[in-house]
Length: 231
View 1 (spheres, rainbow, N blue to C red):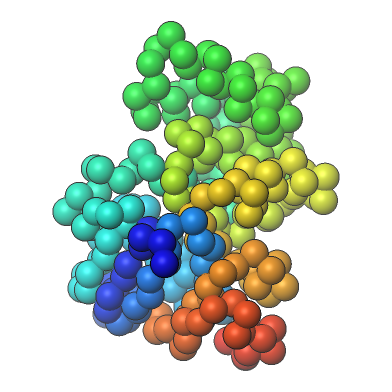
View 2 (cartoon, rainbow, N blue to C red; view 1 turned 45 degrees about the vertical axis):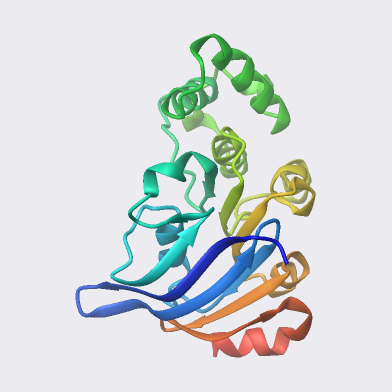
């Protein structure tokens, strides 16, 4: 079995008295894909935020890419790409300016930033709109720009929160080589799309009110079993 990219043991996170994650444990081998299902409020997005170091767990153990979190968060931040359903881009900046800013944050050598940004804009088919303020972009274009930002550091681990949100079929095809199975990265996908999630996954985690209902190989999980999480 491959080395674990993520190892969570008894992971717990709460907001005041409300528990968002409680005693969640799973292990994801490097190069594998985990699909996370659950109704709204199940803890899915909180899990992603803990994995990408935006939130600190209150209890339990967590290793990501061989480092203990949150103690060694600095060692993994540049190796993780997060694509959320909210693009979180600077809408008064152009697409090129957004990616150039991100490249500087990741420490890209100054002389290489322009080349790296141009290549990424071409990959997501935004090179023709590179110098336009993104406030003029459609939701699908904003999602493609957010994907470009997440992919900019060539991350080993991709955290995807409803990655196909706002994408028409053509735009989804544009991104699939970079965020889909062919990307050859470890992935965690949060989605309500049962068939899509099961088709993408090697392993599946079902969350209910912050607790793991089950963690199993995708081949052993049925769509009906997933849908019961939403009832």
